[in-house]
Image 1 (cartoon, rainbow, N blue to C red):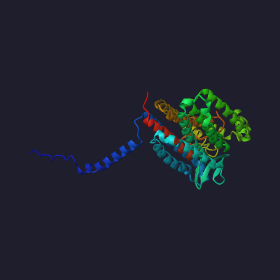
Image 2: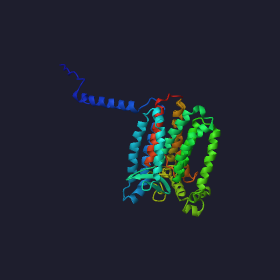
Image 3: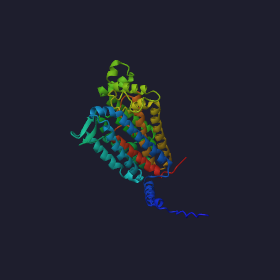
Image 4: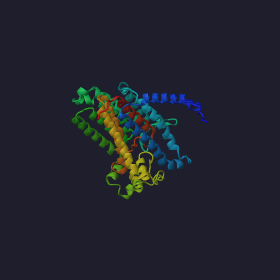
Length: 406
């Protein structure tokens, strides 16, 4: 006797039920892809590397600050991480929003950005509103909110100088058209930072302006003259400060004397010890010894020393490699865009992020005296993180529309 099996129902109730939610999710994903996606591999190279550095930075901020936070904040080991995390949650969406803006938007807001950020920089000198940290008058605070306006000045100067130089492409052989209005406006912005005794940030700002001029096509003779004048002014500023000269003399002497070890070179030498004790593979995440109140600014200016100690040579090389990948992404975008404004802005952001990263690492390794600049995208500091992410978002907006070149 043959039994006939009932035909299979191709639309079972339990399989057809989730179909509508799946379609809804697919539609939502497509909307997000259309809003923030791009068909350019340079976009994803820059975006992916930046996102990885931000996540890595959050992990290292937690590791490097937990001991100090636990001692100072009543066993709240996550206070620095709890402050840095929201900045990342604000900065990444702002980066994506900036990546949607056309170039004409940044040109339109270049002048207002400079005026507003310079005005904010002036607020650091207002009693009750501005405050100093480690001798630098560079922050403002309103209630529990704090900010470092000079980080925003970096992005504003990049946009403004790029707009000026791009508009004067046919006049750049005449030094007067280069000096006016770049020299007075940039001079005021950088001068206010110097008045606040933030030499490290001022050096980065000078490098940004000179880099934008170079990539904008200004003649090397004009840039060289500017470098000589700036060097003379900078030398006078440095020699006017006895404490700064003590640090520089100690650095030039190799931090070899006992007095240097106890005073000017304390931070540098303990950074060396941390990196040296890490070896090849590191002591393990969270296992740093110098972060136990031996290394000042362990979660900020000297976070690379903690990376070297806990993750070893492999972790330190990984960080260097990631910044090299960022540089490659910037260069590819520079080569791909035909627009002078977009090319100069991308160059300025590259000098800012990559240049500041290697200055920070050079300071930790002892190749430069202590300057007090954070490691971009990794060090603790909300103003630095948000400003850097928005700057990278501006470059992403150019890479989205730029043609792909081999």
